[in-house]
Image (cartoon, rainbow, N blue to C red):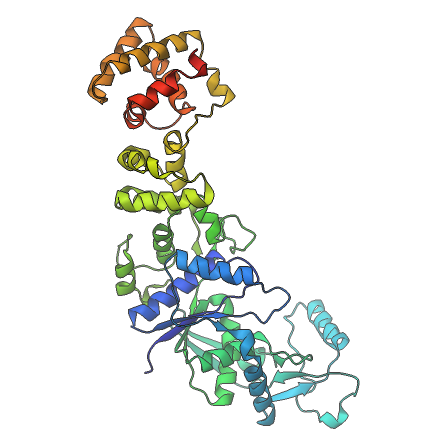
Length: 466
């Protein structure tokens, strides 16, 4: 058998959909597992809707999640003449014919099908008619002459044997009346010319596969192997679409989902290997196979994505976590100044506590990252006259400490609790607000230790306690 070659073939008519990312991932992993090649084909023949910005986003998104293609991108629009040439070959060999039906005739056929509640199939009117009878004022389309009798079996590497009656496949158009090729022709020619050995894609393409197989057979080309992956559904069980929230990679990266976590989640979305849940990149490549893909749709579960992300946040090296945080903040939040690096790195062990996303870590670390404390009106109301006394006394006690640690801070806080006849919240909350601008976030002792005496003194003599 030839060296394994797979491809991912998105259309640059919009942002890359999460289902497309999983398809790309499965293709990439399968080729790498078999020491083959993985290619990216940009299907940009829809000139009105295709945009360079979408192409750039697709490539950037795949790279972000760790998928890089071999060689240059294959741009479909540059191969149109090849597609047209094959259409003409099919015409000459009798495997295709010119159809002169007008748009009104086609619409009438569709109307009758709807009335009978049947799927529309072109009635093959021009299949055996002579072009001598053709109207001179109609530009024809070229239709593939599909098989009418018998059945075709698709030996699907995921779904098993799938059989279809040939008469249910219409004589589909391969060349429009403006001379442009259609998807089924272009994709087939491209896959042949790219020497693709395995076509792995969503199971909504199964009918296209039956059509494309006929073109392969008519051209006497070697058939690739096909694998159709069940689609991704919403948690409610509906087909996931681009209109759903969190349907593109950008939707995940902007809330602080890390690429390794999302890749691991997508790997396990419809695929399994024994009872293993967490896979390194190397393990993903080593263990991936088509036999592990299920036959039923998978449900996209945001809670599972967050859980997977939390696992990575807790378990990856903190230097690596800091790099992810810096990149995330630079794109979506406030850029972290270099002088803050040491302080944040030393504090990551508690800043990541209970954090499910990089955004959670940013929110926990905001009091370090930002030079000025911003106060919400509701939080400022917590700083009443008694709270100001507690804050002032806390500041004076802190100054006298040689070292900031929990052992030294606990007696100070307990002393204030007793003196003011209150509880930990009564002391801790106003101090926390004064230092961070919020009553939420990391523990009080962690905040104090991470800021240091000089920064604490500066913050506690701010306008709210004068």
